[in-house]
Image (tube, rainbow, N blue to C red; front, side, top):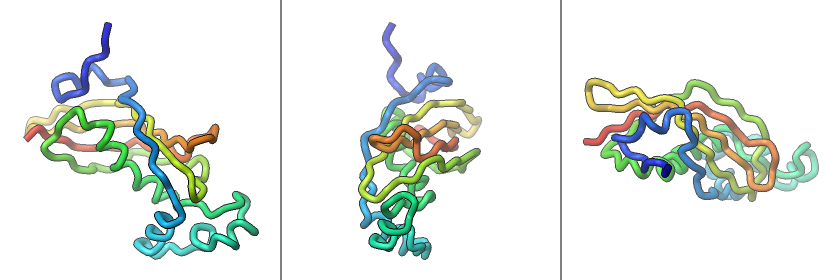
Length: 154
């Protein structure tokens, strides 16, 4: 039996199942520095390369946890492309855990599992998904987050 193609009409059949795995996303020092500027979170462990190499328990600068979280949209758009949604809105998060640091220069990707689908009377669909952000070459994930997204066909 073949897996149905992800669409608004087949969403319910995906509940409890893996949606897929995204492409790798690079996390270079330049992305970490830009995030530090945007958030004004300029802790040395993120932006001072030499000090992080010398003093950090990780031996390198690491991405902000919220930078890792902010990569969810990039991967979600890719994994939910089959919906062909006309509109999509971030509805929030139920739970986020930062498990392992993402070192500068690493690559990460998202393993998404659909937890629930709620069809709303206004035509919007609320998706609840578990997102496990894997770090290339590492055994522990960087993050596990349960996210909520609202999507509409029109």
